[in-house]
Length: 283
Image 1 (cartoon, rainbow, N blue to C red):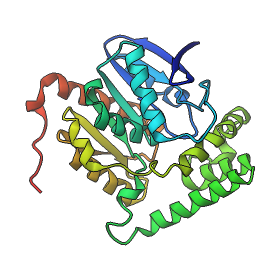
Image 2 (image 1 turned 120 degrees about the vertical axis):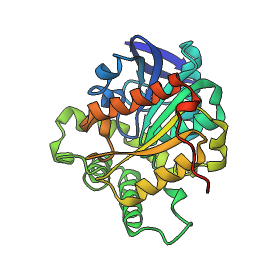
Image 3 (image 1 turned 90 degrees about the vertical axis):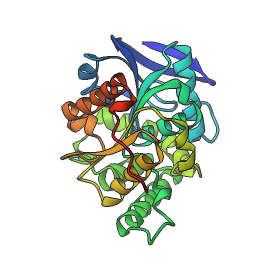
């Protein structure tokens, strides 16, 4: 096992393959094992770095209220520490939000960026009547947090995977070891819920990164996920949004081949130069 001392935390990471470096950033509750299906495919084209974010998997978590800003700082520091920059970065769910913030603050660290369904719900809220699906989702998240705050870590994790993530088989479909790992991660998720910046981003800041970018979404999720993807894509100078058919929130698990092709195509667009990027439509 390999660890890096980063911003007061010990981050566990795995590094393998050959080619330009690609750093994988996982979402909430899970750890770097969420990339196990797709990593072998990505290693055909990249040197892949998958790590456990602070408070997840084998990585430690210093005491105190955590924030998305700490995760962004960790990612930047890990890239610098490994001497891997600039790198391609792919982030799923909350990992996508972290990757986007890195693109805004440290564009020099990135070759390209690919994010899948970053949960930036505050982008949708307030621009129009909030979609009923989002209102329902926020209610579920509030219920999850209430259970966690009451000390019912397993109950909160169960509710999340049955009502929010809607994973195939839900909580009942997870083995005992996986359930135990999720319960151990529950306090870190509660930090995310309490963080006022976790579900928002300043779209204007994304103009700082003008490299190739891809924002993907699935068609087994409520329509507001597509809307968020389109808003983020429009804010990045050289980005496009793209559907990965048949997927929900974790295409790297359920559709590793399609996910790999999307990442490889993004890298190939960079290699071909900015002239290969589709022109942005005028607003």
